[in-house]
Image 1 (cartoon, rainbow, N blue to C red):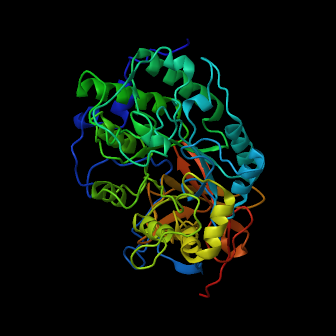
Image 2: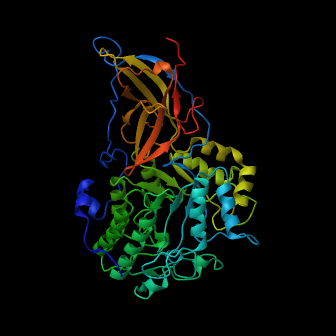
Length: 519
Protein backbone atom coordinates (compact mmCIF):
# COMPACT_ATOMS: atom_id res chain seq x y z
CA UNK A 1 0.00 0.00 0.00
CA UNK A 2 1.40 3.40 -1.01
CA UNK A 3 1.01 5.68 1.96
CA UNK A 4 2.59 8.86 3.23
CA UNK A 5 4.03 8.98 6.69
CA UNK A 6 0.76 10.05 8.24
CA UNK A 7 2.35 10.28 11.68
CA UNK A 8 4.14 13.49 10.68
CA UNK A 9 2.18 16.58 11.57
CA UNK A 10 2.08 19.63 9.35
CA UNK A 11 3.74 22.02 11.77
CA UNK A 12 4.59 24.52 9.04
CA UNK A 13 1.01 24.63 7.82
CA UNK A 14 -0.25 25.16 11.36
CA UNK A 15 2.12 28.04 11.92
CA UNK A 16 1.11 29.66 8.63
CA UNK A 17 -2.52 29.97 9.70
CA UNK A 18 -1.69 31.23 13.19
CA UNK A 19 -3.06 28.36 15.24
CA UNK A 20 -3.71 29.16 18.86
CA UNK A 21 -2.62 26.52 21.42
CA UNK A 22 -6.28 25.70 22.04
CA UNK A 23 -6.81 24.77 18.39
CA UNK A 24 -4.39 21.85 18.80
CA UNK A 25 -6.82 20.07 21.13
CA UNK A 26 -10.14 20.61 22.79
CA UNK A 27 -11.64 24.07 22.13
CA UNK A 28 -14.18 25.13 24.76
CA UNK A 29 -17.53 26.50 23.67
CA UNK A 30 -17.32 30.23 23.02
CA UNK A 31 -19.37 32.93 21.35
CA UNK A 32 -18.28 33.51 17.78
CA UNK A 33 -19.24 37.18 17.93
CA UNK A 34 -15.97 39.09 17.98
CA UNK A 35 -13.88 35.92 18.24
CA UNK A 36 -10.44 36.19 16.62
CA UNK A 37 -10.23 33.70 13.76
CA UNK A 38 -7.45 35.68 12.11
CA UNK A 39 -7.66 38.03 9.16
CA UNK A 40 -9.03 35.52 6.70
CA UNK A 41 -7.79 34.72 3.19
CA UNK A 42 -4.80 36.67 1.90
CA UNK A 43 -5.79 39.63 -0.28
CA UNK A 44 -3.48 40.01 -3.28
CA UNK A 45 -3.33 43.20 -5.36
CA UNK A 46 -5.43 45.04 -2.80
CA UNK A 47 -7.33 47.98 -4.27
CA UNK A 48 -7.45 51.30 -2.45
CA UNK A 49 -10.72 51.28 -0.51
CA UNK A 50 -10.92 54.80 0.83
CA UNK A 51 -11.45 57.22 2.28
CA UNK A 52 -12.48 59.17 -0.81
CA UNK A 53 -12.59 62.82 0.22
CA UNK A 54 -14.43 65.06 -2.22
CA UNK A 55 -13.46 68.60 -1.14
CA UNK A 56 -10.22 70.43 -0.51
CA UNK A 57 -7.81 69.79 1.04
CA UNK A 58 -8.76 66.11 0.82
CA UNK A 59 -10.14 65.95 -2.72
CA UNK A 60 -7.60 63.37 -3.87
CA UNK A 61 -9.98 60.88 -5.46
CA UNK A 62 -13.52 62.12 -5.02
CA UNK A 63 -15.59 62.16 -8.17
CA UNK A 64 -19.03 62.54 -9.66
CA UNK A 65 -21.47 59.70 -10.10
CA UNK A 66 -21.05 58.38 -13.61
CA UNK A 67 -23.23 55.25 -13.57
CA UNK A 68 -25.63 53.45 -11.27
CA UNK A 69 -27.16 49.97 -11.27
CA UNK A 70 -30.25 48.40 -9.79
CA UNK A 71 -30.53 44.89 -8.26
CA UNK A 72 -31.22 42.08 -10.69
CA UNK A 73 -33.49 39.10 -10.10
CA UNK A 74 -31.66 36.60 -12.29
CA UNK A 75 -30.51 33.26 -10.96
CA UNK A 76 -26.80 33.36 -10.09
CA UNK A 77 -24.59 30.31 -10.64
CA UNK A 78 -21.09 30.80 -9.30
CA UNK A 79 -18.66 29.33 -6.80
CA UNK A 80 -19.57 29.91 -3.16
CA UNK A 81 -23.36 29.87 -3.33
CA UNK A 82 -26.45 28.18 -4.69
CA UNK A 83 -29.37 25.85 -4.24
CA UNK A 84 -27.93 22.31 -4.16
CA UNK A 85 -29.93 19.43 -5.64
CA UNK A 86 -29.17 16.14 -3.90
CA UNK A 87 -28.29 13.10 -6.00
CA UNK A 88 -27.63 10.92 -2.96
CA UNK A 89 -28.00 11.43 0.76
CA UNK A 90 -27.73 8.33 2.92
CA UNK A 91 -29.09 5.44 0.86
CA UNK A 92 -26.76 5.55 -2.13
CA UNK A 93 -28.01 5.71 -5.70
CA UNK A 94 -31.44 7.33 -6.20
CA UNK A 95 -34.11 4.88 -7.26
CA UNK A 96 -37.34 5.50 -9.16
CA UNK A 97 -39.35 2.38 -9.94
CA UNK A 98 -39.20 1.38 -13.61
CA UNK A 99 -36.80 4.19 -14.52
CA UNK A 100 -33.16 3.93 -15.65
CA UNK A 101 -30.64 5.41 -13.21
CA UNK A 102 -29.28 7.84 -15.80
CA UNK A 103 -32.74 9.34 -16.41
CA UNK A 104 -33.36 9.69 -12.66
CA UNK A 105 -30.10 11.61 -12.25
CA UNK A 106 -30.61 13.63 -15.44
CA UNK A 107 -34.04 14.78 -14.23
CA UNK A 108 -32.48 15.93 -10.95
CA UNK A 109 -29.90 17.96 -12.89
CA UNK A 110 -32.69 19.53 -14.94
CA UNK A 111 -34.55 20.84 -11.88
CA UNK A 112 -34.27 24.55 -12.61
CA UNK A 113 -33.77 25.91 -9.10
CA UNK A 114 -30.65 23.84 -8.50
CA UNK A 115 -27.34 25.40 -9.58
CA UNK A 116 -25.19 22.86 -7.70
CA UNK A 117 -25.45 19.15 -6.97
CA UNK A 118 -24.51 17.00 -3.98
CA UNK A 119 -23.48 13.37 -3.61
CA UNK A 120 -22.74 11.51 -0.38
CA UNK A 121 -21.44 8.01 -1.15
CA UNK A 122 -20.17 5.39 1.23
CA UNK A 123 -16.45 4.66 0.90
CA UNK A 124 -17.25 1.24 -0.59
CA UNK A 125 -19.10 3.03 -3.42
CA UNK A 126 -15.90 4.59 -4.75
CA UNK A 127 -13.24 1.93 -3.98
CA UNK A 128 -13.45 -1.84 -3.99
CA UNK A 129 -9.76 -2.66 -3.89
CA UNK A 130 -6.68 -1.05 -2.43
CA UNK A 131 -4.89 1.53 -4.57
CA UNK A 132 -7.60 2.16 -7.20
CA UNK A 133 -10.73 4.28 -7.49
CA UNK A 134 -13.70 2.23 -8.66
CA UNK A 135 -16.87 4.33 -8.70
CA UNK A 136 -20.44 3.08 -8.59
CA UNK A 137 -22.50 4.13 -11.59
CA UNK A 138 -24.35 6.92 -9.79
CA UNK A 139 -21.05 8.70 -9.03
CA UNK A 140 -19.84 8.37 -12.63
CA UNK A 141 -23.13 9.61 -14.08
CA UNK A 142 -23.20 12.55 -11.66
CA UNK A 143 -19.72 13.73 -12.65
CA UNK A 144 -20.50 13.39 -16.37
CA UNK A 145 -23.71 15.38 -15.97
CA UNK A 146 -21.85 18.01 -13.95
CA UNK A 147 -19.77 18.86 -17.02
CA UNK A 148 -22.78 18.65 -19.33
CA UNK A 149 -24.99 21.01 -17.30
CA UNK A 150 -22.30 23.24 -15.77
CA UNK A 151 -23.45 22.39 -12.24
CA UNK A 152 -20.60 21.67 -9.85
CA UNK A 153 -20.83 18.97 -7.18
CA UNK A 154 -20.31 18.91 -3.42
CA UNK A 155 -19.12 15.57 -2.04
CA UNK A 156 -18.72 13.66 1.20
CA UNK A 157 -17.33 10.13 1.36
CA UNK A 158 -18.79 8.44 4.44
CA UNK A 159 -16.71 6.16 6.65
CA UNK A 160 -19.74 5.30 8.74
CA UNK A 161 -23.41 5.34 7.78
CA UNK A 162 -26.17 4.42 10.24
CA UNK A 163 -28.86 4.37 7.54
CA UNK A 164 -27.62 1.23 5.78
CA UNK A 165 -27.19 -2.32 7.10
CA UNK A 166 -23.89 -3.02 5.34
CA UNK A 167 -20.74 -1.29 6.53
CA UNK A 168 -19.74 1.89 4.71
CA UNK A 169 -16.10 0.80 4.63
CA UNK A 170 -14.77 -1.32 1.75
CA UNK A 171 -14.10 -5.00 2.49
CA UNK A 172 -10.33 -4.56 2.10
CA UNK A 173 -10.38 -1.97 4.89
CA UNK A 174 -12.60 -4.08 7.14
CA UNK A 175 -10.05 -6.90 6.98
CA UNK A 176 -7.54 -4.68 8.77
CA UNK A 177 -9.77 -2.48 10.92
CA UNK A 178 -11.62 -3.74 14.02
CA UNK A 179 -15.09 -2.39 14.84
CA UNK A 180 -16.22 -1.36 18.31
CA UNK A 181 -19.53 -0.84 20.08
CA UNK A 182 -19.98 2.41 22.00
CA UNK A 183 -22.03 2.87 25.15
CA UNK A 184 -25.73 3.56 24.72
CA UNK A 185 -28.52 2.65 22.34
CA UNK A 186 -30.63 4.29 19.65
CA UNK A 187 -34.31 3.40 19.77
CA UNK A 188 -36.85 4.08 17.05
CA UNK A 189 -38.97 2.54 14.31
CA UNK A 190 -37.51 -0.97 13.78
CA UNK A 191 -38.57 -0.83 10.13
CA UNK A 192 -35.83 1.72 9.47
CA UNK A 193 -32.28 0.40 8.93
CA UNK A 194 -30.79 2.85 11.46
CA UNK A 195 -32.68 1.09 14.27
CA UNK A 196 -31.73 -2.44 13.23
CA UNK A 197 -28.04 -2.57 14.17
CA UNK A 198 -25.52 -1.42 16.76
CA UNK A 199 -23.64 1.24 14.73
CA UNK A 200 -20.19 -0.17 15.38
CA UNK A 201 -17.42 2.39 15.00
CA UNK A 202 -14.15 1.61 13.23
CA UNK A 203 -10.88 1.72 15.12
CA UNK A 204 -8.78 4.57 13.77
CA UNK A 205 -5.61 2.50 13.65
CA UNK A 206 -2.65 2.93 11.32
CA UNK A 207 -4.36 0.91 8.60
CA UNK A 208 -7.56 2.98 8.55
CA UNK A 209 -5.72 6.30 8.55
CA UNK A 210 -3.32 5.08 5.88
CA UNK A 211 -6.07 3.73 3.65
CA UNK A 212 -8.02 6.95 4.18
CA UNK A 213 -5.07 9.04 3.07
CA UNK A 214 -4.68 6.90 -0.03
CA UNK A 215 -8.37 7.36 -0.87
CA UNK A 216 -8.25 11.13 -0.37
CA UNK A 217 -5.11 11.51 -2.43
CA UNK A 218 -6.56 9.46 -5.29
CA UNK A 219 -9.72 11.57 -5.30
CA UNK A 220 -7.73 14.81 -5.18
CA UNK A 221 -5.43 13.70 -7.99
CA UNK A 222 -8.52 13.30 -10.15
CA UNK A 223 -10.70 16.22 -9.02
CA UNK A 224 -8.69 18.83 -7.05
CA UNK A 225 -9.13 22.12 -8.95
CA UNK A 226 -11.19 20.44 -11.67
CA UNK A 227 -14.48 21.74 -13.09
CA UNK A 228 -16.67 19.16 -11.34
CA UNK A 229 -16.12 19.78 -7.63
CA UNK A 230 -17.56 22.73 -5.67
CA UNK A 231 -16.69 21.65 -2.12
CA UNK A 232 -15.66 18.63 -0.05
CA UNK A 233 -17.16 17.89 3.35
CA UNK A 234 -14.60 17.04 5.99
CA UNK A 235 -15.04 13.36 6.85
CA UNK A 236 -13.99 11.78 10.12
CA UNK A 237 -15.36 10.21 13.30
CA UNK A 238 -18.86 8.94 13.87
CA UNK A 239 -22.25 8.68 12.24
CA UNK A 240 -22.19 10.00 8.67
CA UNK A 241 -18.61 11.18 9.32
CA UNK A 242 -19.78 14.41 10.96
CA UNK A 243 -17.62 14.23 14.09
CA UNK A 244 -20.19 12.74 16.49
CA UNK A 245 -21.80 9.41 17.36
CA UNK A 246 -24.93 10.71 19.09
CA UNK A 247 -26.75 9.16 20.96
CA UNK A 248 -23.81 6.88 21.79
CA UNK A 249 -21.41 8.07 24.48
CA UNK A 250 -17.66 8.42 24.37
CA UNK A 251 -15.34 6.98 21.75
CA UNK A 252 -13.19 3.94 21.06
CA UNK A 253 -9.80 5.55 21.74
CA UNK A 254 -7.56 5.04 24.76
CA UNK A 255 -7.96 8.69 25.79
CA UNK A 256 -9.44 11.97 24.62
CA UNK A 257 -5.94 13.14 23.66
CA UNK A 258 -5.46 10.12 21.39
CA UNK A 259 -8.84 10.77 19.80
CA UNK A 260 -8.04 14.43 19.17
CA UNK A 261 -4.63 13.60 17.66
CA UNK A 262 -6.12 10.97 15.33
CA UNK A 263 -8.92 13.25 14.17
CA UNK A 264 -6.53 16.12 13.51
CA UNK A 265 -4.44 13.77 11.35
CA UNK A 266 -7.61 12.87 9.45
CA UNK A 267 -8.34 16.57 8.96
CA UNK A 268 -4.80 17.41 7.85
CA UNK A 269 -4.86 14.60 5.30
CA UNK A 270 -7.88 16.25 3.70
CA UNK A 271 -6.49 19.79 3.98
CA UNK A 272 -3.23 18.70 2.35
CA UNK A 273 -5.02 16.82 -0.45
CA UNK A 274 -7.65 19.42 -1.38
CA UNK A 275 -5.42 22.44 -1.96
CA UNK A 276 -7.76 24.10 -4.47
CA UNK A 277 -11.17 23.10 -3.12
CA UNK A 278 -12.73 24.36 0.14
CA UNK A 279 -13.46 21.84 2.86
CA UNK A 280 -16.83 22.21 4.57
CA UNK A 281 -16.89 21.29 8.27
CA UNK A 282 -20.04 20.52 10.23
CA UNK A 283 -20.66 22.76 13.24
CA UNK A 284 -21.99 19.76 15.15
CA UNK A 285 -21.00 20.10 18.85
CA UNK A 286 -18.11 17.91 20.01
CA UNK A 287 -20.52 15.48 21.69
CA UNK A 288 -18.07 12.56 21.88
CA UNK A 289 -15.01 14.69 22.74
CA UNK A 290 -12.90 13.50 19.82
CA UNK A 291 -11.42 16.86 18.83
CA UNK A 292 -14.17 17.99 16.48
CA UNK A 293 -14.16 21.42 18.13
CA UNK A 294 -10.46 21.79 17.26
CA UNK A 295 -11.08 20.72 13.67
CA UNK A 296 -13.88 23.27 13.39
CA UNK A 297 -11.63 26.03 14.70
CA UNK A 298 -8.76 24.97 12.46
CA UNK A 299 -10.97 24.72 9.39
CA UNK A 300 -12.12 28.34 9.71
CA UNK A 301 -8.52 29.50 10.12
CA UNK A 302 -7.52 27.55 7.02
CA UNK A 303 -10.02 29.46 4.87
CA UNK A 304 -12.55 26.63 4.68
CA UNK A 305 -16.32 26.71 5.05
CA UNK A 306 -19.07 25.49 7.41
CA UNK A 307 -22.21 23.41 7.17
CA UNK A 308 -25.09 22.33 9.37
CA UNK A 309 -27.25 19.27 8.73
CA UNK A 310 -30.28 20.35 10.77
CA UNK A 311 -31.67 23.84 11.26
CA UNK A 312 -34.24 23.67 14.07
CA UNK A 313 -31.75 22.31 16.61
CA UNK A 314 -29.01 23.32 19.06
CA UNK A 315 -28.64 27.01 19.83
CA UNK A 316 -24.84 26.56 20.03
CA UNK A 317 -24.69 25.77 16.31
CA UNK A 318 -27.01 28.63 15.39
CA UNK A 319 -24.84 31.17 17.21
CA UNK A 320 -21.73 29.90 15.42
CA UNK A 321 -23.19 30.00 11.93
CA UNK A 322 -24.91 33.35 12.35
CA UNK A 323 -21.73 35.00 13.69
CA UNK A 324 -19.19 33.32 11.45
CA UNK A 325 -16.55 35.45 9.69
CA UNK A 326 -17.98 37.08 6.55
CA UNK A 327 -15.49 35.22 4.35
CA UNK A 328 -16.77 31.80 5.47
CA UNK A 329 -19.58 30.17 3.49
CA UNK A 330 -22.50 28.47 5.25
CA UNK A 331 -24.06 25.33 3.76
CA UNK A 332 -27.46 24.66 5.39
CA UNK A 333 -28.92 21.20 4.91
CA UNK A 334 -32.54 20.48 5.68
CA UNK A 335 -34.90 18.09 3.99
CA UNK A 336 -37.86 19.79 2.29
CA UNK A 337 -39.87 16.57 2.24
CA UNK A 338 -39.63 13.49 4.48
CA UNK A 339 -40.81 10.11 3.23
CA UNK A 340 -43.07 9.51 0.25
CA UNK A 341 -46.25 11.26 1.35
CA UNK A 342 -47.51 14.15 -0.75
CA UNK A 343 -49.45 15.39 2.28
CA UNK A 344 -46.72 17.75 3.34
CA UNK A 345 -46.47 18.26 7.13
CA UNK A 346 -47.31 21.69 8.48
CA UNK A 347 -46.55 23.38 11.79
CA UNK A 348 -49.10 24.57 14.34
CA UNK A 349 -49.66 27.75 12.33
CA UNK A 350 -50.27 25.92 9.07
CA UNK A 351 -46.90 26.67 7.46
CA UNK A 352 -45.36 23.80 5.44
CA UNK A 353 -42.35 22.35 7.26
CA UNK A 354 -40.20 22.83 4.17
CA UNK A 355 -41.00 26.55 4.11
CA UNK A 356 -40.33 26.84 7.84
CA UNK A 357 -36.86 25.36 7.30
CA UNK A 358 -36.16 27.68 4.38
CA UNK A 359 -37.15 30.77 6.36
CA UNK A 360 -34.57 29.81 8.98
CA UNK A 361 -31.98 29.22 6.25
CA UNK A 362 -32.41 32.89 5.42
CA UNK A 363 -32.06 33.80 9.09
CA UNK A 364 -28.69 32.01 9.10
CA UNK A 365 -27.53 34.00 6.05
CA UNK A 366 -26.77 30.84 4.10
CA UNK A 367 -24.67 30.49 0.96
CA UNK A 368 -26.13 27.08 0.12
CA UNK A 369 -29.39 25.24 0.74
CA UNK A 370 -30.20 21.60 0.07
CA UNK A 371 -32.92 20.70 -2.40
CA UNK A 372 -33.39 17.33 -0.75
CA UNK A 373 -36.29 14.96 -0.35
CA UNK A 374 -34.56 12.90 2.35
CA UNK A 375 -34.78 9.13 1.75
CA UNK A 376 -36.91 9.46 -1.37
CA UNK A 377 -34.69 11.40 -3.77
CA UNK A 378 -36.31 12.17 -7.11
CA UNK A 379 -37.04 15.18 -9.30
CA UNK A 380 -40.81 14.61 -9.33
CA UNK A 381 -41.05 15.21 -5.57
CA UNK A 382 -39.04 18.44 -5.88
CA UNK A 383 -41.24 19.63 -8.73
CA UNK A 384 -44.42 18.70 -6.86
CA UNK A 385 -43.41 20.69 -3.78
CA UNK A 386 -42.33 23.65 -5.91
CA UNK A 387 -45.64 23.64 -7.77
CA UNK A 388 -47.60 23.63 -4.51
CA UNK A 389 -45.40 26.07 -2.54
CA UNK A 390 -43.34 28.19 -4.98
CA UNK A 391 -43.04 31.46 -3.04
CA UNK A 392 -40.43 30.57 -0.44
CA UNK A 393 -38.30 28.64 -2.93
CA UNK A 394 -38.40 31.51 -5.42
CA UNK A 395 -37.53 34.02 -2.71
CA UNK A 396 -34.58 31.95 -1.48
CA UNK A 397 -33.38 31.40 -5.02
CA UNK A 398 -33.25 35.20 -5.56
CA UNK A 399 -31.49 35.97 -2.26
CA UNK A 400 -29.30 33.06 -1.22
CA UNK A 401 -25.56 33.62 -1.05
CA UNK A 402 -24.00 36.82 -2.32
CA UNK A 403 -25.30 38.94 -5.22
CA UNK A 404 -22.77 41.67 -5.93
CA UNK A 405 -22.81 44.67 -8.23
CA UNK A 406 -21.45 48.23 -8.34
CA UNK A 407 -24.46 50.23 -7.17
CA UNK A 408 -22.49 53.43 -7.92
CA UNK A 409 -19.59 54.07 -10.26
CA UNK A 410 -17.83 57.40 -9.76
CA UNK A 411 -15.39 58.90 -12.24
CA UNK A 412 -12.60 61.37 -11.50
CA UNK A 413 -9.41 62.56 -13.17
CA UNK A 414 -6.30 63.17 -11.04
CA UNK A 415 -3.83 66.05 -11.59
CA UNK A 416 -1.57 63.81 -13.68
CA UNK A 417 -4.36 63.06 -16.13
CA UNK A 418 -5.13 59.51 -15.04
CA UNK A 419 -8.80 58.60 -14.84
CA UNK A 420 -10.05 56.79 -11.75
CA UNK A 421 -13.19 54.68 -11.45
CA UNK A 422 -14.50 54.24 -7.92
CA UNK A 423 -16.91 51.35 -7.51
CA UNK A 424 -19.47 51.37 -4.70
CA UNK A 425 -19.90 47.61 -4.37
CA UNK A 426 -23.13 46.34 -2.85
CA UNK A 427 -24.34 42.86 -1.92
CA UNK A 428 -28.05 42.18 -2.45
CA UNK A 429 -27.74 38.62 -1.12
CA UNK A 430 -27.99 37.36 2.44
CA UNK A 431 -24.38 36.17 2.89
CA UNK A 432 -20.90 37.62 2.69
CA UNK A 433 -18.47 36.80 -0.12
CA UNK A 434 -16.77 33.51 0.90
CA UNK A 435 -13.32 34.45 -0.28
CA UNK A 436 -11.75 37.47 -1.95
CA UNK A 437 -13.60 39.43 -4.66
CA UNK A 438 -11.51 40.62 -7.62
CA UNK A 439 -12.62 43.52 -9.85
CA UNK A 440 -11.21 43.88 -13.37
CA UNK A 441 -11.85 46.65 -15.91
CA UNK A 442 -11.17 45.51 -19.47
CA UNK A 443 -12.14 45.99 -23.10
CA UNK A 444 -12.75 43.46 -25.85
CA UNK A 445 -9.67 44.55 -27.78
CA UNK A 446 -7.41 43.51 -24.91
CA UNK A 447 -5.70 46.89 -24.63
CA UNK A 448 -7.17 47.52 -21.17
CA UNK A 449 -6.99 44.96 -18.36
CA UNK A 450 -6.54 46.47 -14.89
CA UNK A 451 -7.92 45.62 -11.50
CA UNK A 452 -7.37 44.19 -8.04
CA UNK A 453 -9.11 42.84 -4.97
CA UNK A 454 -11.18 44.13 -2.08
CA UNK A 455 -10.90 42.82 1.45
CA UNK A 456 -11.98 39.25 2.19
CA UNK A 457 -15.71 38.80 2.78
CA UNK A 458 -16.71 42.16 1.25
CA UNK A 459 -19.10 43.51 0.24
CA UNK A 460 -21.24 42.48 3.19
CA UNK A 461 -25.04 42.27 2.84
CA UNK A 462 -25.15 45.50 4.85
CA UNK A 463 -23.11 48.51 3.76
CA UNK A 464 -21.17 49.63 0.70
CA UNK A 465 -17.54 48.79 -0.03
CA UNK A 466 -15.83 51.41 -2.19
CA UNK A 467 -12.77 50.51 -4.25
CA UNK A 468 -10.80 52.41 -6.87
CA UNK A 469 -9.26 51.27 -10.15
CA UNK A 470 -6.96 53.65 -12.02
CA UNK A 471 -7.18 53.36 -15.80
CA UNK A 472 -4.10 53.42 -18.03
CA UNK A 473 -2.95 56.87 -19.20
CA UNK A 474 -5.17 58.11 -22.01
CA UNK A 475 -8.02 55.65 -21.35
CA UNK A 476 -11.42 57.09 -20.48
CA UNK A 477 -14.72 55.50 -19.49
CA UNK A 478 -16.59 58.13 -21.51
CA UNK A 479 -16.10 56.11 -24.69
CA UNK A 480 -18.39 53.38 -23.32
CA UNK A 481 -16.19 50.49 -24.44
CA UNK A 482 -15.04 49.34 -21.00
CA UNK A 483 -16.48 46.45 -18.99
CA UNK A 484 -16.29 45.27 -15.39
CA UNK A 485 -15.89 41.60 -14.57
CA UNK A 486 -15.95 40.03 -11.12
CA UNK A 487 -14.22 36.91 -9.82
CA UNK A 488 -13.99 35.24 -6.44
CA UNK A 489 -10.69 33.78 -5.29
CA UNK A 490 -11.08 30.67 -3.12
CA UNK A 491 -7.98 28.75 -2.08
CA UNK A 492 -5.93 30.49 -4.75
CA UNK A 493 -8.35 29.66 -7.59
CA UNK A 494 -10.31 32.37 -9.44
CA UNK A 495 -13.95 31.65 -10.28
CA UNK A 496 -16.18 33.94 -12.39
CA UNK A 497 -18.95 35.83 -10.60
CA UNK A 498 -21.82 37.27 -12.67
CA UNK A 499 -22.67 40.90 -11.90
CA UNK A 500 -26.12 40.77 -10.25
CA UNK A 501 -27.50 43.92 -11.88
CA UNK A 502 -30.84 44.41 -13.62
CA UNK A 503 -29.41 45.95 -16.79
CA UNK A 504 -26.21 46.09 -18.82
CA UNK A 505 -24.99 42.58 -17.96
CA UNK A 506 -23.41 40.62 -20.80
CA UNK A 507 -23.77 36.86 -21.43
CA UNK A 508 -20.36 36.31 -19.79
CA UNK A 509 -21.58 38.03 -16.61
CA UNK A 510 -19.59 41.23 -17.10
CA UNK A 511 -21.14 44.70 -16.83
CA UNK A 512 -20.89 47.39 -19.50
CA UNK A 513 -19.38 50.55 -18.02
CA UNK A 514 -21.43 53.25 -19.65
CA UNK A 515 -22.62 56.63 -18.41
CA UNK A 516 -26.27 56.70 -17.37
CA UNK A 517 -26.07 59.62 -14.92
CA UNK A 518 -25.86 63.16 -16.27
CA UNK A 519 -23.22 65.56 -14.91
